[in-house]
Image 1 (cartoon, rainbow, N blue to C red):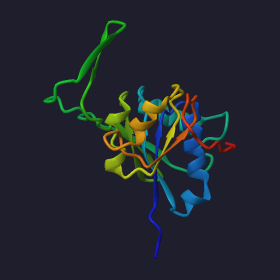
Image 2: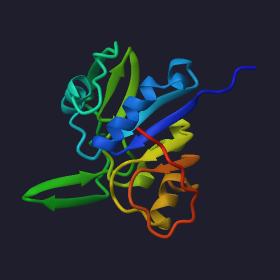
Image 3: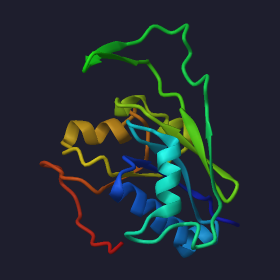
Image 4: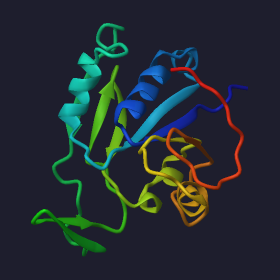
Length: 181
């Protein structure tokens, strides 16, 4: 009987999140179909810039040189305008509207596979449970405490089964594992 594919999400797609993503794409587990990246959450989700960085990364390796195809698809109708925003925050004279549930703003197409991209600042609004996410890589570089940890994993939170930190962690019992990227 074939094992189920482990579904991965990445929260935060700066330098660390992008390198973890590249590492996963080059792993034997990904090539053998044992793991799959299905979602990325990046608050500043400028998909064309993300695609450009993946194509032309000079600090580690770029995916084009590794034989991958990279495209993007932006969703112009990702917000249901009939829903009232939960919160409106004015930053620098611009109103940012936050809605009750995360909607993808677009998708990365890596070798034809669609990876949904979200721009959701509220962790517990992310659809990790709905997407069947097994593991979330927390790469937002925001210090996480126990309450925020449970927003990714606990029932009533986003619903992921496991969380791996790539950011500072305050007062959470854990096992430290070393990984070289």
